Image (tube, rainbow, N blue to C red; front, side):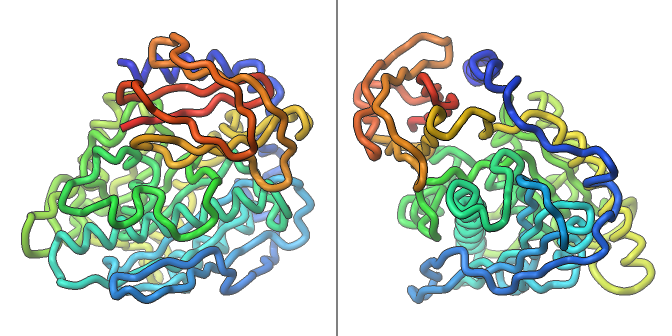
Length: 408
C-alpha cells in the first residue's frame, strides 16, 4: 500500500512535467510498418567490461541496428539479450538478430548484447549467480545508452523509452532488470554484495538502468512477488509445453538448493493482481523458443512473435516517458542517483555535460511527508540514510525530475 501511495504521489508531482514532455511520434506508420528498407549496423560496440567467474576481465560488446536515413532526433531503444542457459549463445544468434533487424525497419534503434556466460560448479546456486552477473551486464548496456543520450547523442536515443528484451536466458535477464530491484529480494546464497550489488560494476556508473517496459520471450522470474504495484509493463510469449523453461511454476538445473522458477504463465496472475499490464501469448502445445530457426514453421512463429510484441510496444510509446522534459538543460539538471537500492548512502551526481546549480532538495516518505530537507551543494554529494527507516522515498526539488530512493 505504501508503494502504491508513493506511485500516486509521484504521478501527481510530475504532472506539470508530463504536459511538457516530448513523447514518441507514432504517426505515418512509424513503429508499425517497415518504412525503412535499409538498416545501418554497428558491430562489436564496446559498452563495458566485467570480471568473469574465473577472475578474468571480459570486454562487453554489442551490435547496434539503426534505420538507415532516419532523421528523428530521439528514438526508442530495444536492448536484446540472447538465450543459451547462461552457458552459451552470442549476440549474433539468429533469433535476436532477426528481431533486432525487424524492429529497426520500423524505426527503433535496437541492440543485441553479449554478456558473461559460464559458471562452475554446475549447480543451481551458480546458475543463479550467473543470471545476476548477466543482468548486471544488461544494466550496463542500458546505462551506456543513457550516458550517450546525455552527452554525445551518437545514437539519438530517447532516454525515457528504453526497453529490456530477451529470449530464454535473455528474458530472465530482462525480467530481473525490471523487477529484481531490492537487495532484500535476492536469495542470501547468491552473495549479491560480493557480486557488486544489483547494479554491478560492468560500466557506465552514475546513469539509471531503469527501463520503460520488458519483452519476455520464454523467460521466467525467481519470485512472482518481485512484481509490485507501479512497476513497468511487460509482454510475454511462451510455449505451454516448454520443457526447458516451464510455462508455469517449475524448476531448472540440478544440485542444491533447488532452483524454483516461475514462467510466463505463473507470473501473469501476480502482475494482474497488482495492476501491472502484462499481455501474454501462449504458444499452444509448443516447446522452447519456437520462433528460433529458419524453417517455415519457425519463421511463422517469428512472424507472430514480431507482431505481438510490436502491438504491445507501440501504445506504450504514446504514453509519457519517465526521464524526459522539454525544459532547457540549464533549467533541468540531469540528476543521477546510485546505488538504488542502497544500504547506507546514495550518491547524487550530475551527468557529464549537464549544468549544475546548488538547490534545496526534499525527501518524502511513502505517505508524502517530508522527512529530510537539505542543500545539494556539490556536483557529487552523498545522501546518507542515518535514522531513516527501510523503504521507498521520493527525492524532489526545483528544476529536477522527482526520483525514487530506496533504502534497505
